[in-house]
Length: 444
Ligand SMILES: [Zn+2]
Image (cartoon, rainbow, N blue to C red; front, side):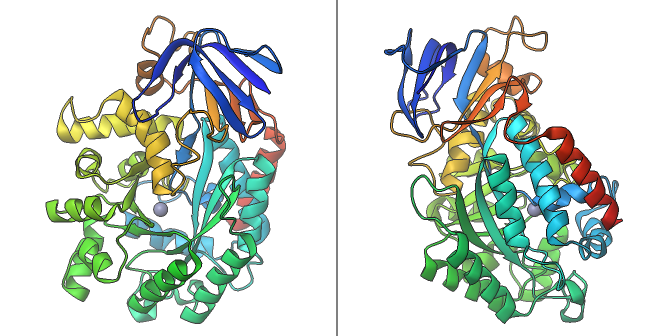
């Protein structure tokens, strides 16, 4: 058992319950008590939460972990220019590079409060080895939960797509690879550490047939669906020219809206599309820093929440968000929502909701993750708020969302310690950095 007491607690439960000085008790993998005042038990390991805020672990709904090895390139480019410059570099990926990059990216996420990570991997070079295994082993090494999206691209340059032909798969290989990943790694149980989803990359890199057949495969297998959608105006123009409708209408026509789907970005949505995402329960992975880095626009997060759509936060790949930390996305999401919709557009508590329960809903994990309640999995972050960076801010949630990203006093995943006193406990940070430097060097 682990007993955290004397801490401020934001449970992010349905009523938004918070405690000024309370306790969280963890027994094995689960939370067994949360409340105000001293813990009802003195058994187990005691963690003094004085000066700290406890929240659910953050849920990252969109990433490309392999990109940690290709940060800082195409620094001043649009999305399409950035992709065209990076595709040939990514063509050199092998399993060892992907593992090193993913380990580094996951370490960074854990150190910024993240306990569950959705990774969208769509680059499978022919001689690149077992990319999915490289990701699974990185997730296991760092000790977080992984929702690995087996991505795919089947529309190379010669078919009017953006990626070079040698980087795309044929439809059969893409579907076979996705089915193999599901059969090998997908764990449907409530305490799953690894789940697989199906994820054709985007309308401009994937054929209509692959979009449809990947959706059929996912639904037959009972896994979720993920893709990039409506990220840029370039994408919208291309979609209108090629199929005569917007990306959201195109996704709708292919069976790609639904409560088993979450979409990365959804920046450019007409009012009718926002309503459709709400009606269908389609999730959005809002990636404010990446959208800012590529200058793609500001996603209508507030409007999507009002329409009833689940909205979670994502860091996106580190090649378009070199920081790669999830804690700061709470801050960025709030700033961008207010730049778009004024000072009332998003509260600090709504930003925290998106980073926790909103993300859990996108991934279909709302019954076991996303809030601190008895019976839920013990995935939580204890943020230190009593140092120079936050001292004097009396509202701990405002300190977390408006202030600098706090150090992590303790990060638990299923009751197991991943970060303690600001340091990764599951792996050696300097060894990870060395491996990453070597891997990144091999790609350039
Ligand atoms: Zn992305």
